[in-house]
Length: 387
Image 1 (cartoon, rainbow, N blue to C red):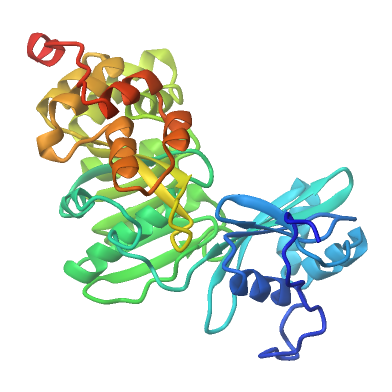
Image 2 (cartoon, helix red, strand yellow):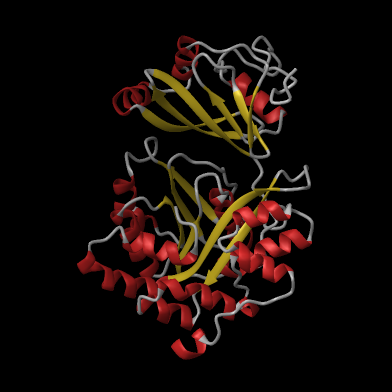
């Protein structure tokens, strides 16, 4: 038996805990949960694949035909969703396993056949400690106004980190939290906070409509899923300017790149105004990478870069010195800021990741090697001269 195969196949005839109304795909979701996998992939004429601790591997199930996948997918979709899929060739939905986890699902057409990628979202929202995230995130959550951005590539854990931050607020502050999600991932239970979650395509037709009525819903804290376009980011900035704490995600690999990615959404003549607004309203940028952990019980562990908007940071953003934001982090570690190399070094020293993994993930491997040898690299005095 191949080591790349999962030893226990998905039993397509298992009736355990099933109801007559349960879609056939639920058995694949349950098996994914049982195997403690993070993702399930279905592709025509291939056996189901799952991702465990970052590695995709085939199950021992027989291949599924395109017709089988199409029939099972249709059981998950409303007529409106089926029409959307037919028109657009892709759709995001979510599915709950009663009493267990939730799945964020993307169904897409490739080479004329339907494929499916489902991300498992645990039913319990993890806290900072269980996610191995620094406690400085709790301080970020204590702001009552401004913009907090989570950056990273797809699958880097941004959504889970935001969920843990919103849950921290839920446990500690009496306020109204409104989320706009596509689709809803984590389900919150009201604690000190009142939480309303709006799902695109179900509770509201699109992001534009959700943003249009957002201020009428009297929110204190807002989550605007992924900031994909100019209109979404403008709405987030306007909300942060009017006394709300706004969370959002951006596809970027560093704090400096996050600012540049935002400005790229706007025409050149608008960027100075956006830069000024961002310098006033940004509270923090948290960039994240998920890396394989040496502790098999953990699976993957985050390395994080954290930029807090202190006066120097705001000045640099306003002056267009985005490339110097890393120097702000280096000069402000006592405030809780950190760059990726510091995070990677701590993970190596705590024997959480292999040094080879750290060097491969590092934006500056040579500097990381010097840090590991006890040599602190500094480009000297940039903060003092510029601030």
